[in-house]
Length: 80
Image (cartoon, rainbow, N blue to C red; front, side, top):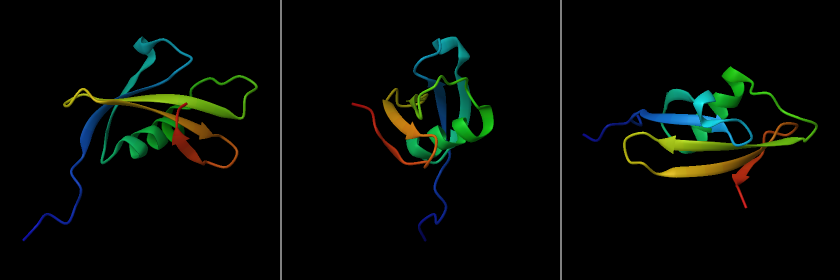
């Protein structure tokens, strides 16, 4: 019987406009979930912009993704 629950992975997440040493390590099931959890839990400092770019790095595979998150609507899309 296949595992019905997604496996949590370890991610390092930081806002693109802050130094990488401000990154947080999170356990989530996807890159997107890690980006959202980072913004919900850690509230990185933001400027006057209505959006923030978040870098998510999978600590096991080494893969990295960037997401742009609209802080007003919560819409998330890959960075340009």
